[in-house]
Length: 184
Image 1 (tube, rainbow, N blue to C red):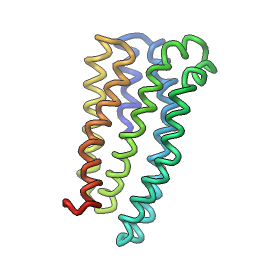
Image 2: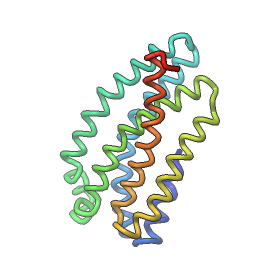
Image 3: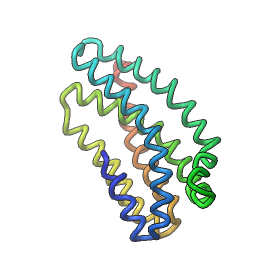
Image 4: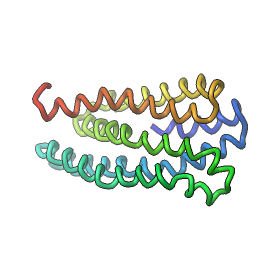
């Protein structure tokens, strides 16, 4: 789950430059504030559902609502004002990291779907599935970044991260929908 955030700065520093790794890390750090929204609400979902498993579906719906109410406006704020936020670090950071920050902000939506899904699987004691979901995201992100950074630069990391989360979110999202439509 945390592997991309730990490995990507090293990959970027070695493949592009330490300066580009700093641009990445600044955008990533701001994005983690968005990433924390679904992850913390998912933690709450886990705590509530662990004690009251029969109410899991009710807690899932409530968690999705809360995530949506907080995350969607937050993403729009980053999309509109992300370059201004990066100006606190300097104009080079704003210029070099704003597009990456926007992609990371958009990726928080599929990440939210994955977070809800992995929490459901944790409550159901399917830890292998949780590991698999996180591993697929990490593998797509790291391999995608490796290939894209050399071709399109730092923005490739954003595309790889978004792609990894989106691919997994599509599959896990259908699973969540099926839970409520009865298409188990």
